[in-house]
Image (cartoon, rainbow, N blue to C red; front, side, top):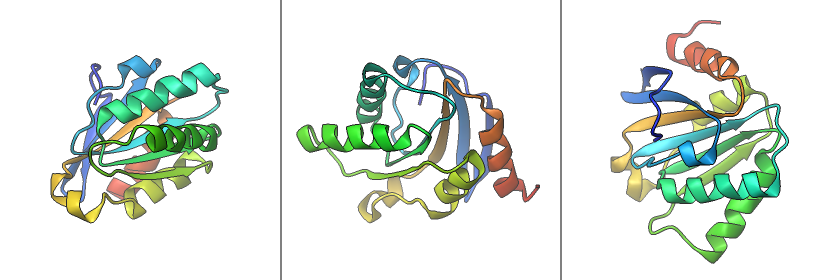
Length: 149
């Protein structure tokens, strides 16, 4: 997904989960075969930052994109607007949630799927914390994967 090394790797439903912390949209890269979770918590993004994220998401070729955090609705709206102008070559599922990290990760891992015709391409989950602390996302993933509280 990114040019950086994941901060941690796990697996869920026989698919790898890779966690990344990024500070800049340019750090997002190829997400082919992956379900992408983008956590944006505790930030106020400028329109230029939102559009940078939207471009990176479009270029990443994820199977599904789940945007979470306080800015999720505005980034989601910008993404839908961009996709209406320039569609991706293959369909992607999109969701957003302004819920806290724990609830958003639960929705992402337990109720987010790629389009049926792209299901066989699904190899991994990629969880990205954008300029936000990774720990709440990591703790939520571990709670689901390992059943810990």
